[in-house]
Length: 259
Image (cartoon, rainbow, N blue to C red; front, side):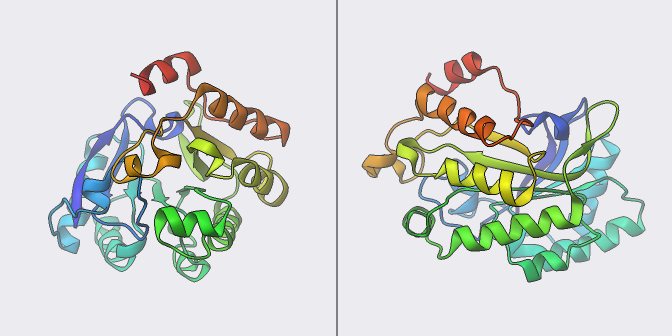
């Protein structure tokens, strides 16, 4: 099932470029996050069924609109159908970089099927603690699975590479959403990336958390992230030697998220 597709200008700047990232939002998810901002898609099932030919046609239409890439959002649970559609689309001239945009809960075995297929991996690193992951996303063993996945992604595509216009062509781009009260375990995330992946990892530390879906009923999640929490996360990343941080004007960012 697909919720929507089209050029998207709200992604990280190396994906957006001038013409947007060609996003395809798949319905449902292999995570069950209690605070999901897209819960109508990921949890409630907003979307329409499509077959492989229709999915291939979406990819080709995004290429025709001059998007810089095909950005597959929450693809893990529908991967066999995506691969089938990709084969059809490639046979009809699809040649854009492929972005695998997941929650980071991917097995190494699954990722092995994508070696040589995916150009850009964009996983989340949501948590550093097993119990927090099970409590907030209904999954077990997230840190181990997530870290093994990120290392495999990096093995396949390396650090993020951009062209002369600053548009991503290949590599790893990691997202980390700061949660209130330190629930995301930011320090362990940035330590892992710096010490076990690469200090040249492109990292987007995101501050846009606000209570959505079921979060308002959980006291520890029932407020936005503070400036102090966000800047502390940035400082931790820099302290561990990560310098390729996605640049958002912090004052404008907080003006937007605290409205």
